[in-house]
Length: 224
Image (cartoon, rainbow, N blue to C red; front, side, top):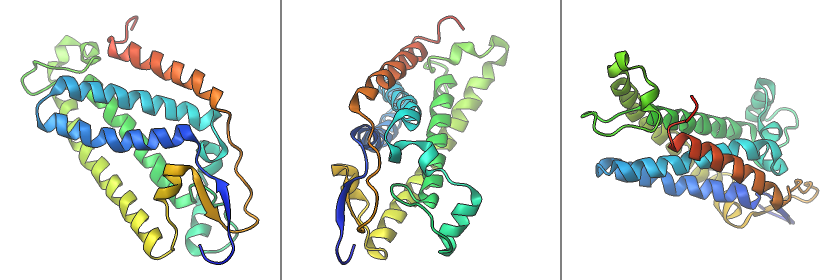
């Protein structure tokens, strides 16, 4: 940021906690899997499920920069952003960054669902929803496990793209993306409107719903 600038609140606390929670959990899940500690792996997977459910809810009731409706753009706006034509609102996630967010959330959610239904190669340990696979489809759990393993490679690719984007914006655009995700504040050009921040009490219903969903899944989805 060159010249005069102002400081605004850009990212709310719940979004930042979600972001850094993902940063911590992904390597922990990889490590526990490599060590064969499937109980811890499942525990971290359920924590990730909690965060994802919370994020989906917060994407509806959260602050302006957290809401999906505020940053998910149509093809026309994405092309306009890439070509530099037209005025595209880019406070928070830009149109291209929004695609990365949606892709990562989708893949993470799919990865968690696959893990919930999978079983290990020996059939000694399985996800909490594996019992919902019909007995006659015994091999299905192993196939799901294989997809679960492949899914992690997709996650690594998306994380790589995310890190590359951070480096690109830092080096070539002179925009520091990491500090605002720590402090919640960013330096922007004068005239940029402060995004609307959601009151923190809205975290309560989001946390409760995410907790209930996670508990229900962890206990094998009773009633299904």
